[in-house]
Image 1 (cartoon, rainbow, N blue to C red):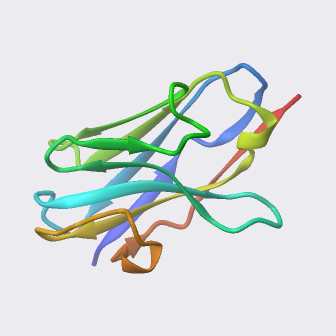
Image 2: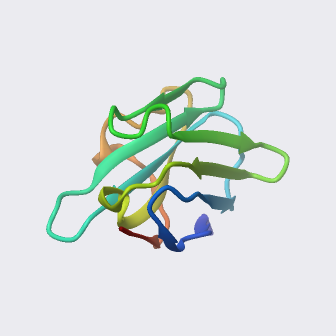
Length: 124
């Protein structure tokens, strides 16, 4: 059974930092695209960042320069280091995986597996 389990969310003051983890199991951690997505109250879910098995990374304009995505293939874990957090970053953060040779984070509907999410709350 494929599982993605997020952890590391919590309450932090503006300007603070958090590191989210996404632990994967049940699939070969070889060709993949793993993304972090977030959904704020009353808003649509949006992509935050993506990392591919070839090491390529991408970020949304709203987090570029503040967030860093990384992966530890040996641990089958993807991290999202979030610095300089703002109240606007408050959301439930999900990780999702697209596996296979042409994997991508471009289309949320194309992601094969999703975690249940972890809540990040940034206070003013």
